[in-house]
Length: 246
Length: 232
Image 1 (cartoon, rainbow over the protein chains, first blue to last red):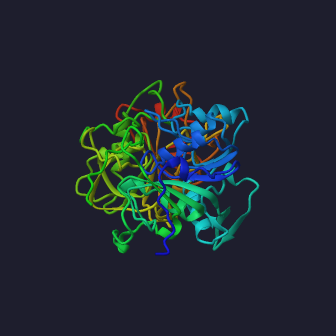
Image 2 (image 1 turned 90 degrees about the vertical axis):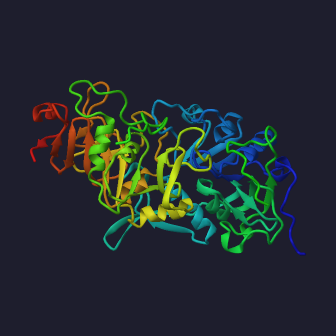
Image 3 (image 1 turned 135 degrees about the vertical axis):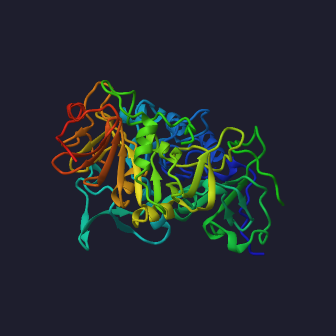
């Protein structure tokens, strides 16, 4: 009844329309919430000159799963916007580094809290905000600052995206989402920031009304496309399959 | 202390191999000494690397809430393979447990907690600390990229910033300096530094010696430091 069909049969179909030059945010933090299946589909889809937003460029973990670094290696990325453009351990070299140092790919390095808030602001109709983070550092050089009540703040702009790829635990056909534990991370703010939000869902997608409205982490209003992750090996799972409770 | 290993990230960045010269404390002892400063009821954020070892320290009945930047509040010990929940990681990607009273929030709310000054202490690793309380931990010399993560938000906004690092580089160069040579993470924020040689407090002109590790003399510590040490 008036419901837009949000459930889509395959990852390929769910991302088929992504044009060259699109800005895409990728959820996930150290594994949980990372949209491995959608990223794999994007590698096959082949859109180019992408601007990719994520916590890291990936590639530091073993075994390696589809990540931003692979899109870079596949020649699909013009620019990344990340909190890490190098590994935490200086001895680890990210696959991305070579492309960045050669000038093939651009990067904007953003403190993690600023990244999250820029996404949230984009989804909240806030064009910019002041934050104390990064004041007095190389990142603030030449940029607008302002002293408010005696403390110096740096102006940061909202970060709107064309698409967000995220992973959720449960969803209903209205697009309402629940995340499990650390899976939540950036996913809700990326869903707010993007015009088109594509979600890979771990548990069976439920009929609208099956999820308790009081227990929704991201409202369906923010979500356009849902794809059920198939069982391995067709679907990519780093997490153990959850016991179905419904 | 439990003697529990903190997982694969434990021997990580800034720090490297043990320094040349007198050794003093090992990494767990450095973390233990700093963790003794935690007060009952504090909300504590531990950075990856040596700081994670603070959660191994037995600090008696003091109630500490460990905050991870990915929105996991109130996490507990790292769980061994087979017992872990793969949906649950701390900021270092370790599969942790949850303590009673834990809560999960999203990234923007997690950093709202940080930015609004609710973190009592953040403990981080670093490459360098200055006498003025600046520190550097996101970019190495000559690199084009960097790894900021949540460090700049935490450094600018936590009530206290404690640093744990080896006193010297692998080549023996001091890491406690008059001024940082590397790009800083934040300025004038560090109040306490634990190294293998002791516990130090940036004082402006130098570092006040709060405590020396067993077997370490003031002269040895001074010789290993790139700024004046001040007797406490």
